[in-house]
Image 1 (cartoon, rainbow, N blue to C red):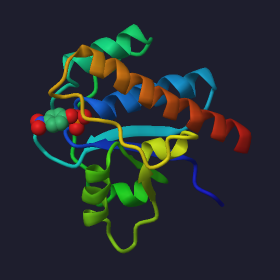
Image 2 (image 1 turned 120 degrees about the vertical axis):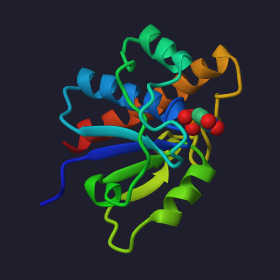
Image 3 (image 1 turned 90 degrees about the vertical axis):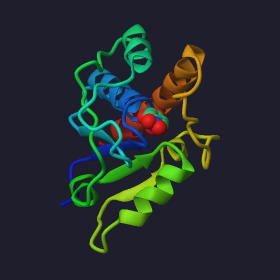
Image 4 (image 1 turned 30 degrees about the horizontal axis):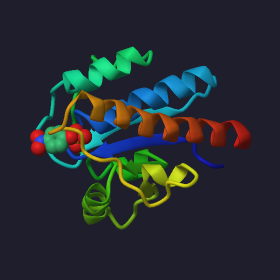
Length: 157
Ligand code: 4NP
């Protein structure tokens, strides 16, 4: 029996991009009435236990999803068995994920934008050192991916 879909979104700090991706996926899944597991984490431990960056919280709220209650956590080896898919925001995240991938990993690991037609192989830029407009661009990227994932699941389900 195939496992139920379980999606993990991964960036560096788990305070800017991946919490937005988690929020976008929660919203897309709710709208499409999909019952899937969704989480996010960072490859680094800098922000473990912290809420998302206020700029991410704001752009998520403006788009209809509350991510203020999320807490940063670091990727761990069990994630490779717990999730069916692990989505990296950029190429460095992808390398960092592959570096800790255990031999018995079952999760498929890929760039998040690989699921968006025409954006395959592209990175979602880190908005941490940039202005608020960058967070809007991040939202557009993660929303495009969340919609594509939801459409894929609706077709396959
Ligand atoms: P994120 O952004 O990986 O999208 O959460 C960053 C957050 C924090 C840092 C870097 C990127 N940092 O260096 O603390």
